[in-house]
Image (cartoon, rainbow, N blue to C red):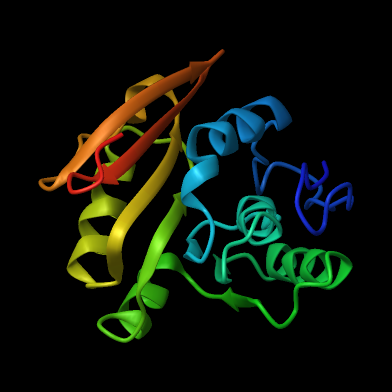
Length: 184
């Protein structure tokens, strides 16, 4: 796994061994960043289920201002920190080892993100719950884009105020939600 382009192009990233995390496949990551390529610059990124941190690191490499990468698994958080160092992005990236719900409580009303990656464990209805809690935490900034990865039975319903575009890559589904003010 590597950073595709930008200032950290070609940097190889590590991932946690075993089944505790499920890294986004290279072709899926490439497709996601092709779809949002003109909407990355100067954004604040939240990767709420970080795994290896690859989605947030790719965004920062491509011009996002900063990123917060959250994972509840202590070993995954260590891998993320090492990947941040490897990509030379320590000033722009913060790693948080916390349950996603706890992070949202801490950030509620204090943080604002306008590019959010959600790749939680695949489970029917789970992304809808996560999006509901993200919205309730009042952390979504202006012109927001939310990128959701799921299995077919976990495709989220677009919340009020957002439009959705759905992509399929084998058994992986990517839903890109954008504030209606921007369209897709």
